[in-house]
Image (cartoon, rainbow, N blue to C red; front, side):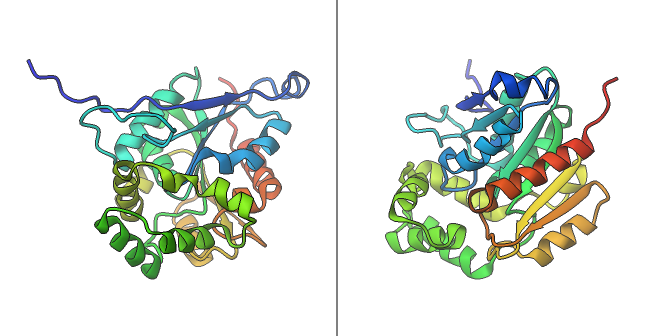
Length: 272
């Protein structure tokens, strides 16, 4: 009898606890799951993760399907925002109570899909450098042409890195661009999923409090787009961070952590 392919991929999750002395001051905080964007690795979460751990938060840094070096996707797995969200749900379910989900760029789309499909697992959603709105058309057409040809060339890689991070030292550029070294069978489908974004009805299905953290200088998702998205629901909040572009968590990790902490404290529900 034929078996259907697995619906989810087993994901690598780097689960970190704050120092015991810090944790003692914050005994009942749910974990924070960090979801990276397209062609990215979890390395770019390090500055924000350090800030959150210092603030007493438990941090789970999750690699999306196929993004952890050496991982193999299960036979028949199709890379979509929904299959990625279901895979992350299996990680979130390891905690006894709902968790905070924070996603950057494509990871924000996965976070929305997760919150819509598995609301009981999600205490809150934070979208960093992302709202469900049409992407920059020039960037979209450039990327789609690369995905159709079956590889990402050096010029496009450089343009992406500049759009995402601005000026970088050679060392940081090497560190942050390692996501482009992944197999194309991961980069291609996940890139197409990122460009398509979530279906129009997905954000309306999200019942968890939602924070948008926008870099004022973001060239991929404008502040106007973020403001329009937040204005559409009383469950949504916006924090605009100066001197930051698309990768707020990397450029301004302290300001990002402060915004997240204030949001989590405000949206925390009292115990039953």
